[in-house]
Amino acid sequence: MKLSEPIGNPAWGAFFVRVAVGIFFVLKGLHDVDHAPLVIQTVGILKNLSHNGITLIGILIPYLEIIGGALLVLGFWTVIGAYMASAIALFFVYTVGFRDAGIVNRDLVVFAASLSLLYTGAGAMSLDKMLKST
Image (tube, rainbow, N blue to C red; front, side, top):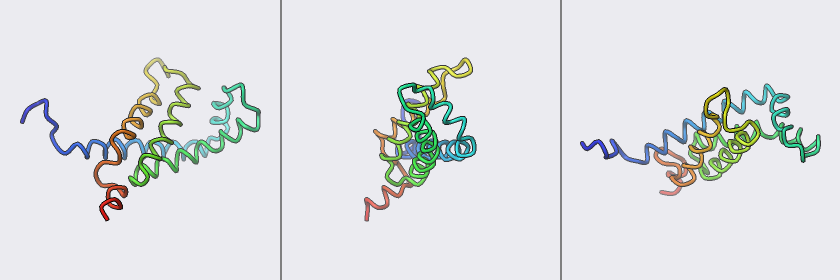
């Protein structure tokens, strides 16, 4: 075994990233549903939106996180789920900033992982792969 060679099938790498990002977004969405005022306050940084627009986006984001995360966990419509996750993560990077608590913002890492799924696809053990083979 060469140390510069993958230890297994690269499709499993996409699987691990997809499931981890999906679980992150499902749990974050469930948390944000319970803490909607905090999400609305975070969205409020966008000064060019009306109060109603800020409230609407603040209410929609948790549900989009749950839907996008579930799509990623299942590996169903993975590219759509990855687009949703990338957009939401990039939105939070924009509103919170690149640094959070003195270290790199976790949303920046989640954005990079979601972006990688746009290029790799679902990987192993996904509904996308099962439906494509039938």
